[in-house]
Length: 312
Image 1 (cartoon, one colour):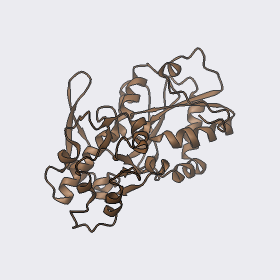
Image 2 (tube, rainbow, N blue to C red):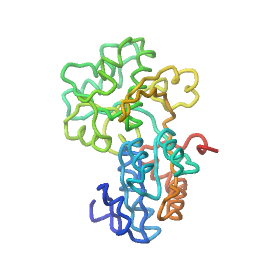
Image 3 (tube, rainbow, N blue to C red):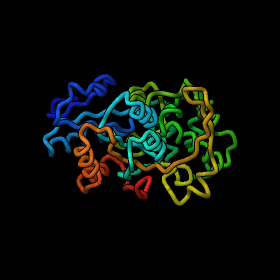
């Protein structure tokens, strides 16, 4: 990380997070959904560390994958910040958390590389009429030669949410088969990348367009297409009668088939019961909920927290 973030150390190596013997008493370790990398490692973490005279260590990856690592004790941290309740459920079942509080929210978008050959078509899609199928964003995504990127639906909520978005788009735009035309198979290795590297691949031109959370896309300063509430999964009022109409199944690492359903795009934070610095973990979450923390989140494209705490 740049030297200007004095006193801040971001560890990406798994071994460094799991080695407690070298840990100092004046640091805090935060694990988080990979899409939060910018706001965590450039804003929230450094600001909190400076205020508390601590060293901040952050690690992000797909929220389900991170939750499983924490639950299996392969890594140890003070705080976990997830998107959707699902990853928190893993820690609850493992006896590692009692509750999780909402700290932010977001919505699904389609982001694209401004230098891509398809960028003009995406720009035009922003202003296309609802009945203009020729220039619709979902038509552009079916263009020959376009490379679309998304994350793993087994390990990452975003990988699940783009599938839900496309399924809902089928219904909303009356386009049968749209999800498969754009995404191929649910677990399509040609499209699936690790969450932490997806926007990097987009910026470098390895993919032309990608699924994204509006929050992470704004943080990365990338252009994107907003989607209506009917398909962006951001409106809790639509969950029961609309969002919940779609689902799909995946196979986990053991080969077991699991049926997945939509969940609200809310970010939750929790202190782990095996946290070496639980007090600092609670202070960090309080900072995220404070006006200063919420201002940093807002400036990076995150919406206000929605709903109440989990498990209460």
